[in-house]
Image (cartoon, rainbow over all chains, first blue to last red; front, side):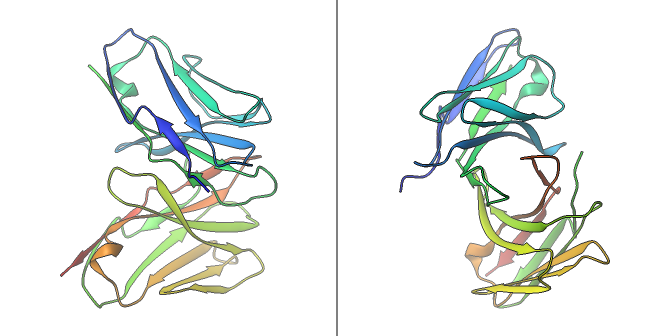
Length: 113
Length: 110
């Protein structure tokens, strides 16, 4: 099976712009979670989607949003970018039932200048 | 907020030595998971231990869980250069949310 695919791998944006990141989960996985990883805050949970429904959301401002499509692919969007949004954004998929392990993509490295 | 906290923050060992890292968590759990992250890459799931298990092995990895102390340990035996990575413990918190600790960075010297 192909792993979790995240695109793009690297992204450089300017403050005030918006960005959309994409995640394709492992085939058959219906749950997609997003995490932000920074040196200072570590891994912070953003949100989780299952069958196109957001089931949980972390403590991030409304500038961070996401969605999931019927084929389980997911996107997250960050509007009005701030310097502090520079981070590695990781997507992970799982079957969505019980507490099965997460399968991570290699992330999108976002740099905001 | 982070549920698990790893200790130590960093560890440097010689190839062939064992590496031990610990994780403490705050609330009751039904399982605890360990992940590895190589520099700039995604996390890779290593092992899951359920709350009714005390010890679990996977290759050169040994994980223990003490629910009374709310702690877990990960032992890597006979370390190799390829084990150089950051290691995270993770616990399921609120529904469908996995909370990660700050991680232990392990450097294996040749």
